[in-house]
Image 1 (spheres, rainbow over the protein chains, first blue to last red):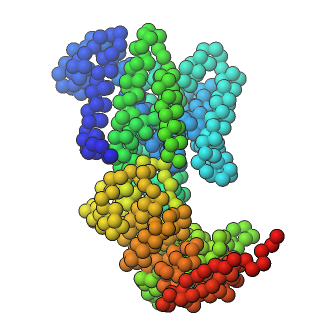
Image 2: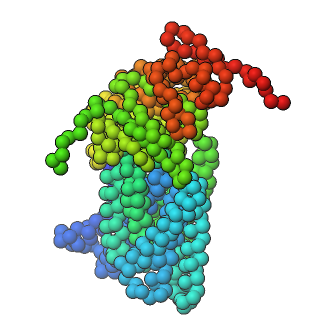
Image 3: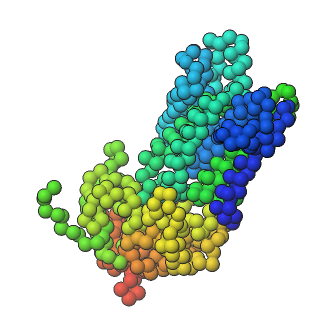
Length: 338
Length: 267
């Protein structure tokens, strides 16, 4: 029932991640071998000499590596956010995208771009975080005043998603020229092109902090399985735990959305897939879900940038194509159980 | 800070004149409950009389508007949520989850108040879970998925989870609702056999008479009777509280209640 040993799963996941990253950076028009990548990493750290030409070196280290790493960070972060939200809200359909958090973050980030309030990675993320908190606050307030049951949460999420998507479109129409509009629309669908090391570092740092917070609260998350009152009677300070963990996930979502746009459904599906391997207890679930999410999105991005080469498919389009059938499968499963 | 220490009330959970208001409505109005260590106290009363509210206040998941709940003489807020959860375990009326868990996973939830952040489950945790499984007759079903269990089995697992908390007090809120009679009896036999102080809200007067040492009867949030089943369950009290006629016979010192048909049925 609970599948393989947790340490084995973790070790396997880490190995798969390292292997995936070193293989996928070699895939593309410029042919480079994994060995070449590793040797040039050594050269960069001051050991040996790089076998790559300066152009190859630039392709690997300035283009493909940050892109591959951001895909990994994004996959890990979204899977983590989804797993935490599903448990806290006791809702198998919860994820940053479905609950409108991603839309709010998009609106915040777009406002920063279009209205020109500085366009650095940090100001983008700050705008996205404000937007994410705003939409999440709206969802929580609305669902609470509607009685707080979990279907209200999802319906409120739908309302927030619509509202903030409209606000985003409105902001873009109002004040952007044609070129910015196209860039923004492409980014809204989720895209890993145009990311740099600054994005990787920021998102990576936020991921590590939020992962740490969540791993410190694994038993708290377990306690929510039978609802908030049951959690309270197991000694959990429910309101504090909810605010802390949901704010942490909103922060991580915001950082990811401001770098790569709203990549849908990863946060929804991967936690469910991971539970099949690990069971539902969070000490096993969270780290493995993050690793599987990372490996998954690294390969999805590779597919997105190579399938129609030289044309690139926005990665959000690919995840949605995979995600919608999985979403429906989850819906059917949860219907059977109630 | 130098004031004399409060006189300890004995190692127990105690509600003193608790009041709970929701807006204008008084759900609980000055109820005192002081179970003796090890006894089983039954809470009786019609729907909406305040049984569940009293249990939630005793568990500390709901604060009283007035009055106090103390554990060993200390008010619950001062004891702290986790420390309360190591002493007081709750079994709710029915338990639902969307999460796919095994019986063992559910029982292990009872160890949460004993565990620290980052640390994996200890040998003590595993022993407490195994003991709880054994005591509730679930040892052979530890790996069975929760979703495949019947209602009665689920309540049994919840009692095992509560035992894994290693509590001194166990609070049960109508745990036998919607169960077949066989499961009702099994569950109550199990609950009263445990070496803990038990407070149990019940619907069924005969079950309360069979299994409880003492009863507290609530109506509209007020305590209207308290005592042994024999003292409390009289035809007069049943008529007054539930508005029905009943005949009470005795089987030893345990009363048995037989409800009577309406004398003058309308229509």
